[in-house]
Length: 455
Image (tube, rainbow, N blue to C red; front, side, top):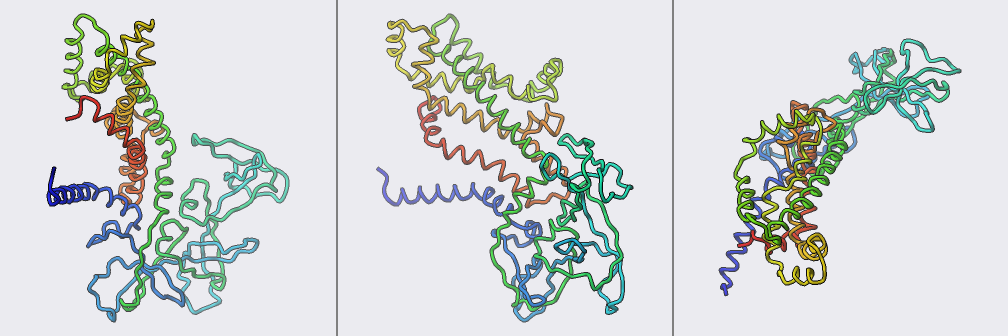
């Protein structure tokens, strides 16, 4: 029996190793909750923070990531704040954010300046409020009667509809996403500066509100209040940025279901044949099957690609799941080793009772091999979920991408790499695997310890 100091040292080493291996995961989680200006700041910080300053009579979240930590409290520093120009419009309940084309900071109150507001059309179609485009945008909307509109469809095309004018309304865009949408239109107006209001917004809101502007103000360093502030909105924005995220998720889940099902069925049947049925040359064939594990995938990558191209499967999900219905050597080995630990007397008793191999396999072996089958299913799920090379080779359309490939596509498409959104998307991709492991942890460890992988 180990002494207490030895146990303590072993426990300490395990905890230290666990912490070291979890550092990348913790950093990913931390970065996913930061604003963009804190993701690459030096020195790096673990926790996302927000800086607040009393500005214009109210506490405002400001940008203060460049201020050194050793700055004296009475030293003046420059912080950035964000704001919008709002315009009061008749028949619109709330002020509309606008983009000013001239400097509104003038003392002449009788001055008029040009501003631009973005808007889109909203129509009631089949009882649902739907964003639409006018079929003829150059024609003024009549006061009554009907009008033709274009309804955007999910495949990127438009459907023409004729609707009553009374069901059509103009909605002013208030977010950056609405302004950048294809159906957004600009309305240029010349207005009196007395109708403009400057609205101070939180520093983080400048990333998604319409027409934000920034400015700097000098304040004493000691007046800046820092607090821990998690940006959970990053996850929602990451899903929006990855426009096909639901489709990526569906493709990954579909592939996991097909590959896990195929692997469990085919490998368990083959393993039963190698472990419970006596036939000439069985062990030699088994070693040949095992030997195929030594052939690296890059060696067979080109021949497989040629084969799948001849079958017309390139650009489809078929190459990513059909091969798994023909068994894989590692999982065959894993299940065979487990099947060999099940006493043969059980099979012999079932044979005396009149059972054939199929019935013995289904009603005797498989129920006893649940831990090993769960390990095989979990291994295959992890392999399919994290597979990047296969989808990269065989898939060509965005709609067919898996989460792993969609994540790489998201990084490439963004160019400037918004690390906070990328880490949020990465967390969402990794999280199901972690949850699955903890849920199946007991079965997984039991299955590993009872197969030929132990020791």
